[in-house]
Amino acid sequence: MKPLKQVIINFLLEEDGMETVEYAVAGSLIVAGSVLAFSNLGGAIATQIGCLVQFVGGATACAAPATP
Image 1 (cartoon, helix red, strand yellow):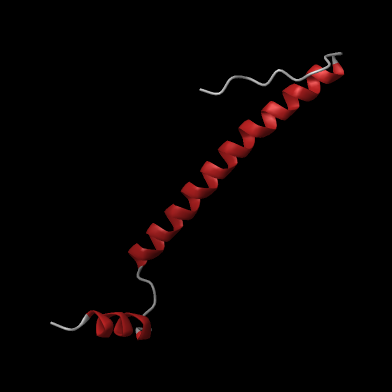
Image 2: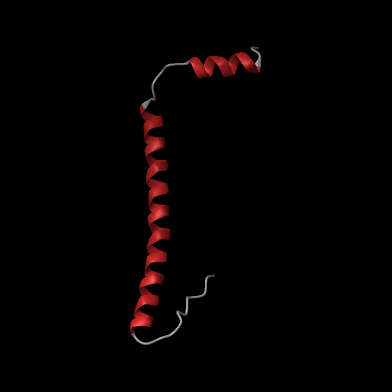
């Protein structure tokens, strides 16, 4: 059995490219992260637009919705 140091060195020196399955996994992780980011951003934008509507309507403070 090779020592851990040698295994790590071999891994870092390996120059093989990504395989098709690895591209699929990497792509799906990027898509999942993007969907999560845009979902959270969309909720924040909707809250801010709601506050703007309240201010335009004459409210003096924004009543932010309760978070679960």
